[in-house]
Image (cartoon, rainbow, N blue to C red):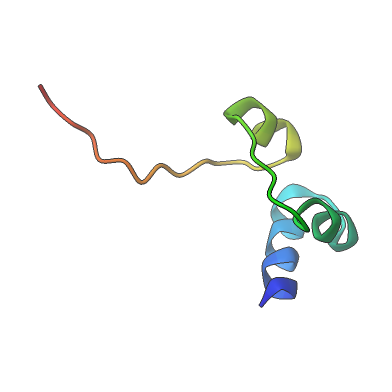
Length: 52
């Protein structure tokens, strides 16, 4: 399963699978700018919009 996720992340970030494996070996929290700089093209939010 981990190799599949690493492969998907590799395709979407332009990083090698080896680099992805190293970067995901431990928890790695990023803010939005860091995620974009890393190569992630989108950030999905699970929060629902709340209207007041």
